[in-house]
Length: 310
Image (cartoon, rainbow, N blue to C red; front, side, top):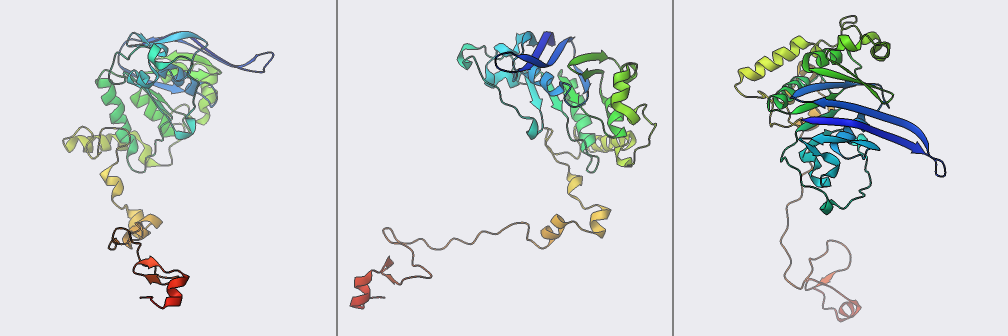
């Protein structure tokens, strides 16, 4: 399904003498649908790896095969049919296109086979986590490969990865470490240093109980009880919203927030004025202020002297 063969990306600086500043190396194969958790400190090469897999960034050496097709030889506007990169707006980077798109191949698939989620914002306030867990599993059940890049800063982030992912990749200084479980990754000192107090799980109890796996299980069970794939969630994409998120919580009932107060008073939407009658063809509408008008037209100095103003 996905083959990353001797992939290498080297960033350099300097004009007369190019000095390497960062090097990313990757070589792995994924033969079956799976959810892969990707972890690593900032600047370790996680986003660069995703850009290389999706074909938006050009490698220094090596190649990426998706559905048996080398993604960097596919037309630019069709590479998302092989692999899709979901990222934050501040992560968008543009690269030069050296080969005309017409000289490249057409994609062999109509929908993405590989989905790469780059640090999705998991917030437990509105049940968004429960939806994302269900969405990742549904993609895997449809025969897709899912990458979830997450930078844990809360205990429930580690629990989420353990609950969802089938295997893991730890990226550190451009080098990849593969493991079947987080416990296997924890045998390496760099990984334990990266997680810090978040490892081992349960050493520090989460401050927000909404982030626990028990609550996610309740959300999933409630969704399935409603008889739909996503339950209370509208739509099928990651941007779908939850009906329950629109209902005021106990905190909102006691102390409504600013946007709810504006909504209650009807000031959250600016009403446009009702359109008035259109002037006749060839004439302009009379002005409310300024010089008087003559038969719908602006009056000139001669009209004032003649006294023919209407």
